[in-house]
Structures are given as C-alpha cells and as structure tokens.
Amino acid sequence: MSHSASSALSHNARKDRKKKATNNSDSVDTSAIVEPADANKSNNAFADKKNIMWVLLSGAMALTFIVMLFLPNTGMGDGMMATYSSMLWCGFFGAALWRYYSANGWTGFAIGSVVGFILQVISQII
Image (tube, rainbow, N blue to C red):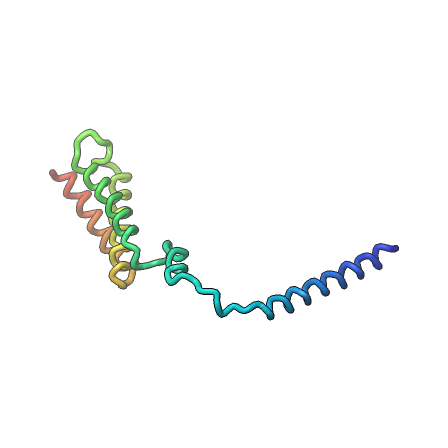
C-alpha cells in the first residue's frame, strides 16, 4: 500500500470516528447534569471586582511601606525608591478600593498615588 492510500484510509477512519462521536453525543441526555451554582465564581476570582482580598492585600502592602517611611533606620525614609514605592502601593490600594466600590480603578490609582506622595513628603518633615 502506498503512502497516499494509507493517508486516505486514515482520513476516512478519522471521519468515521468523528461521525460516531457526534452521534453518541447527540444521544446522551444532558438534562440531568446540574452544575454547582458557584462553579463560575471560583474560576473568576482574579477578575472579580468585588473580591475583598485584592483590597486587603494591596492595603497591607501599602501600610507596610508607609510604616517603613516613618520608622528610623529602615532604609525607606529617603530617596526616589521610597517615593516610588509609596506612590505605587498606595495607588494599587486606591485602584483596588475604587474597583471594589464599582468605580473607575484608574481614578483610584491616581488618588492613591497622590496620597502616597504626600505621606512620603510628610515622613521627610517629621
């Protein structure tokens, strides 16, 4: 048997298997299959705007960096890295909080970044 004849047979065999699979799937009664009510909720945990964990986690990180700004000898009191970190984490917290309350996350990020910058400037004065 040549290569083209064997490939034609395998092509016909695949078509037959596909046809049988569609016939078998049509005959299965799917009315008894019940999915759990929260099946889709667990799959969308990262995209869920009402997930309080994002607010708590970003708030904890923002609080960590803000506390480090005010503690002596932590290495976070001065320099541009302190400014960036406080603005970034306060911005993440603001974005998560605003998204949790169904508002625009970018607005929350901007407000949080401004608050982080102000806290960094205050930590330099105190």
